[in-house]
Image 1 (cartoon, rainbow, N blue to C red):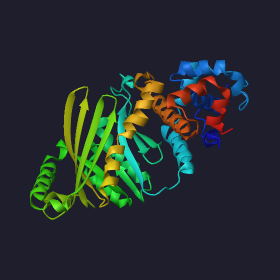
Image 2: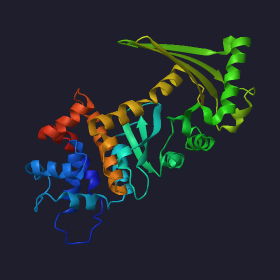
Image 3: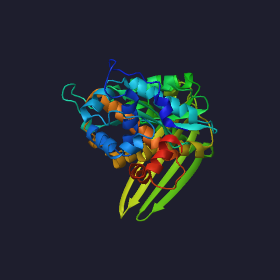
Length: 365
């Protein structure tokens, strides 16, 4: 399946009679980003070094445009149009495989700070744990406005048979209500932003442990890697009338206590976190949701930083930075979908070096 066919309906934002064909520029940028380019100058350099390959698929009658022209064209395309391309691609390859766990998390590109707007690009990423794919990205006007972006993302998705996980900042009654309204379920951490309810849940676990321990459902995991040992102890309870604050949360059915212990080169640390959920299912399913939420950090944000040095990307114009961020996430998905057993960094490096491998990623040939 050629990913580029999803770009063919993009509208040229320029006036007519331009020197370089619009789709030539789009194809150049998509190909360059998938090959590791991270700036307008690097995109131009990729084009100059791979012009013969590019001409296999597009005419490029006037050669490769200068970097200023590339930047001017891409930053005039509305990010919503690029995001629709991304979503159309994702929706075509998505297949339902039982309950889908979706993690929603935000990320700020520190080096995209724009002195004129006094802000950096902050975007919210939607990650499918079960598929290992980025499902969506949406810009928010700063971390403080992330909740509104999360609400809009939830509103745009079909969440039937899906479980949504968020970080503590997005544990909000309105977000829980929106997820239930969209026929989904949620698993949300309780921290300082809901201190009273957190204390009530903690007291509830203490009371049941003392009076009716048979009501507790428990599970534990131990992971050892080199000098580090991670232990996680889970305890689950059904929601009861004893929790007076629970009625404020739409659909809530269970609460979860997670105690994490870590030993790393003799250094010990411990953390206890409480979660609320609209699910009343086996505790191992809830444990998987909790553990899997951080995949969006480890398998999406971290890879983007390592492969593309995304936090160092100095593209500061608002639409340009957002459009390149969308394309980087598309590239990550294409690399994950390719069956070759290699790291993400290895696959995207290979796309930069090998015309044949780039053909496979971009065009399915």
